[in-house]
Length: 363
Image (spheres, rainbow, N blue to C red):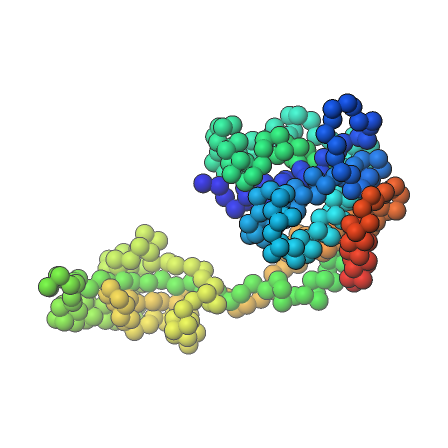
């Protein structure tokens, strides 16, 4: 069974395969004519490319579409197409620009690197044979050749980001500290506690096909655990009493459980333990299957994590935001330097409207 990660990875690769890098050249005799929608530095993006990406985008929105004819014949898809197409167009142009630049810098992966990436994906999803892998790709609507092409493009673009974008993202130690001071609550370690427990089951018996509890037996178990509590209050080691009497799985650890996040406890238990001091023991608690004693071993108040402990988290959080911003600037620079020739005025309008909206949405 494929994991969600496999599906999402394949989906990302699929979205990258819809734009095929094809140099413009004179059409040979007998070649099938492609309707070119836009040229980006001489590389073409065709109607077939667009339809492929539209189908992938609609499938991700759980729309039933299987081939380009559905895009033309199903009236209910028109609104959905209008929603996804502007983003597809901008992403397609950006994809061409990034991949062109990656090729200029010689950042394409080797065959060995691509094979290693494929093998990691197989391993992560417990796929052991090439046949299983190809079958899984087919189930996701992707051929092996399309997958390989998309993987190669994604690899090259990732290296481009590392080479051209990441060096522009700098975070000083002082910036990290200032962020930490302004968002201390975000890095607070929740209040926690550690307990020990003793559990003694109340046996049941079958009567008329139902499991019932004998009242006298239940009373004897309650008295037994009450006596155990009295011995603990009298000074006997609770951990030794666990070893002697408990039937809880925690017995293997001398009854020790935790640390537990107080916010994740059941409300009734949280309220009970919240009123106790460290070292105190609850009265016998009747559970569904028996009686339980709980001793509060320790309590740790909520407190901010030390700066050094969360420094990497801060860098990841701020760095992610800066990478997005720098990547947008980098793409804008590539667009400004590119020769983009639209062959379809309606799609050009959608493309330009999407770019204008992106500029308006900038913080």
